Figure (cartoon, rainbow, N blue to C red):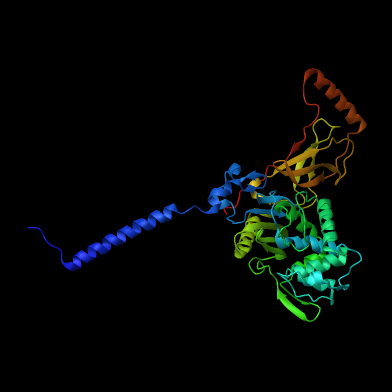
Length: 435
């Protein structure tokens, strides 16, 4: 006889069936979700000179960032990571770095110079310190308002002070860009406001500009400020820095935030850790938060993979150098000082290439006998001379006569005529960090 279910059992069965159906739908939705952006784009990101795919990098080895364009370099401009670094795009208020450069290089202006605020500056709008037309504000206050608070009104006031008008100032901005080698950049405004104008740059050009700007100590000190108090012509006003990267990462030195609807969220930044300085530019980030978390991720990644390394210590034996006046004698050549360099672990082993001079006559301790080059691939990362570790005498006349006879015999009947120089240095193995 068939058993019948109670009402409670029926409801429970239906509930279980509904839950199973919901679980199946949820699983299907999760599977249908798009992969993270990194998983589909990381292969085209460049790690040094090669793409992540060419290096065979795993997803975990490549920075997980949202920016459309970006670059990470050291202080000398060596590129550690990049994403579409040469593609032209709007750059928003990172523009103000160039504005500051021209102001700081104008010999007619000092930080104490008072600037009369024009109506054009006072009416600029959007991000501003509230400059009042007809009042006077110091160059120092305008620079702080420009770089710490990102005041558009400060940009126009400074442009007027340098060139008399924004249009004339923009011409100087573009001339300076060409001088610096920013070949893919065109400035149209001193503030970065880009509505209805052709105002663009690239991540590569912007990091070049920022590295140049940071060579000016006044610029460097202002962009490192986390807050400022400046005059707007009528009263003192205080602002926190727009750069929230301060506090998110050790060693942050600046530099400049930016946002327009064309550019998206942008940030140019610099940080130093353990004596190593890195520069980062991210452009076209989806959200304000992303520009900071992207920069934090890239800088942390850079410091993990690019480090100062001691390649040799003073007194390290580098080579046995043949003494050409003798048949079978050499002198030891050593490295006279500690050698350090920045090493990018993705570039692999460091080759130690010893170049030796022909040596004849008396050799004195400390005499230069050649050099060592430390190379990763074709890139020379350090060089040092090598010097004699001890004195070595040339043969006396009677020894030289005996050597000549022996060499003559060796040429006829075979045998050694001179010792061979040889390197005592092996390649240095470098293993990439796991993340």
